[in-house]
Image (cartoon, rainbow, N blue to C red; front, side, top):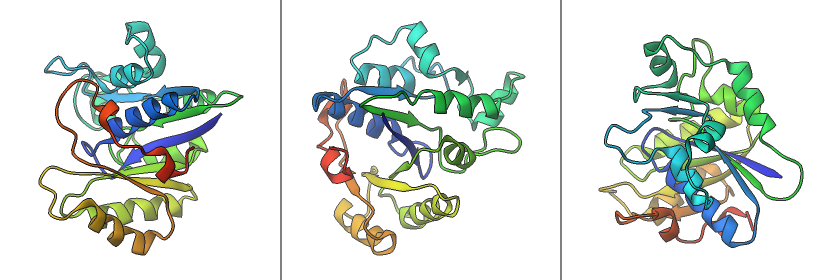
Length: 228
């Protein structure tokens, strides 16, 4: 089984949409898929909307039962804050060694894909001494970086890519998710980033209109990312 750790330049960029779309498209291509969202803040959603774990289960064609949510997202916290802060509100803490073991243990033998969705951005704190970057590096998985097209994304994206590479994390690809009010077209943002990132595979997700199952309306990503 091949694996990817889906991370982002920040919160609310489009990480879950990208992960769900990849799961949906891999399944449509006849691939076996597994997904994990080990750490989740802001759960349950204050507005009653499905959380990230539920959406990833739906994208796999699975009913998001409480048991399945427990299985893919064991570290869930109520406050919509960084995991260290959210856990502290509940008198809890993430056991980093257990988190890494859970992530690595999800990579099963045989064909197919495992997609592990992180939490927040690349350097969000998980506990008093570890960030998501430490988690990615310890997982042994290559990273798929999701970035927006808002003003400032060039610096954020290049910084995120630089810290991943500094920790010897392979950058498997970049997904540009169009931000609301994007100041330039996605293609222009892409060209600017790839001048510095080189031949990193890159796919684009335009703004998706509100509605059920938005991952089904994402354009094909697998070919651009070399996942076929």
